[in-house]
Length: 145
Image 1 (cartoon, rainbow, N blue to C red):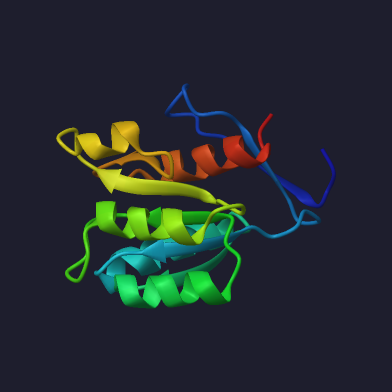
Image 2 (tube, rainbow, N blue to C red):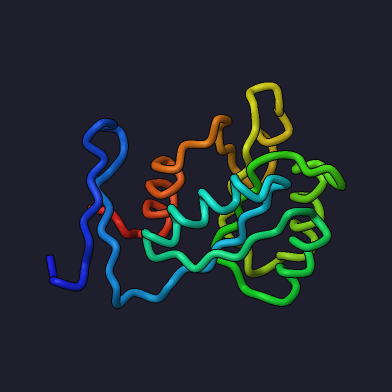
């Protein structure tokens, strides 16, 4: 491994892969969506340490505007929002993101069965595990060993 790469090992969870984050790799852009600013800050700090560039939205209107103006590799919607449910937001995204569809992780409980048939999103179990998010993103982008 080169001096410009960082190997992150999740020793307490054998199901999570070893992740290699190279400083030379193109930075992935992430949009975090949640109504609680402190949750956004914690996730942003964690993803930032792993080399992700992170934008945040506190409501669906802001999220949809950011999506229209920017390209994101990943959208993380951690819960329903006061102005729109996560399901409705994903439906709106599906119409906007026809060809360039990013990975969409949605915080959901088992009773949120709409995610099982969603083409746009996959389940991010609540409570949200920051290590799982990093491992899932690394898997999606091939940054694992």
